Image (tube, rainbow, N blue to C red; front, side, top):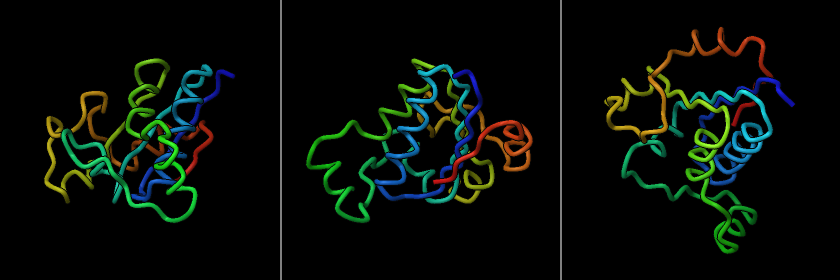
Length: 129
């Protein structure tokens, strides 16, 4: 493939977190440069030692849990470790939640503002979850 994928992740639901993680991991291991901008309600799932159990919206979310699908946080970590993926926390969301860089998972990059992210992702195919 070799293209660029951008993901803006703001949801706190299992289904949307799972789909974003699947796009990031499959995209990254398929040779795409992937950047994920994490903000709003999704931010809490990237805090070290935080709760990784997201609420489900419906039948698919319940099936993901029942069938023991790979957790979304594991897929994001694998995207970074096995492919060309970078995960950027939103600087505004970090300020609102009073988070520091050290509070976040080790695979998460330095915080970035939305304006900078959109500029950097201007030549990418951008997905929002």
